[in-house]
Amino acid sequence: MPPQAGAIGNQRLIALEDSQVSFAWTDYRDSLKKVMTVPAEEFIRLFLQHSLPTGFQRIRYYGFLANCHRATRLEPRRKLLATPYSDLLPRPTDYPDFGERLRLCPKCGIGTMVRIQVLFPCHGPVPMLVDTS
Image (cartoon, rainbow, N blue to C red; front, side, top):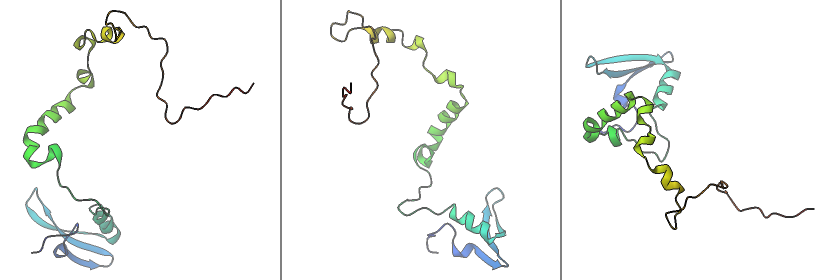
């Protein structure tokens, strides 16, 4: 049998009658092959959900869902999803000297810096100020 190039192989298409498409599918819960009949519009919708745009490549599972990583990497992620958000956020007690380090002078390391003004990043060229008075 040649490899399947599309979302459904020709051998799975059974009939097209009265705008109804019948195709075979496998129910993996029962390990049985079954036949489903749907309107042609619905079949096209289902078919197009499995087709990829030009330039895309089909990847079944990638990253932590790949079979070689699934057993070891999926369980910690499930635990993180079950953890309340507040437990994941850093606490001030985790970084006791963080605020003090920000205020020390970067040159001498002794003096304390005081914030005078906050400058936000500029996107694009800085406009030239022109005196119009």
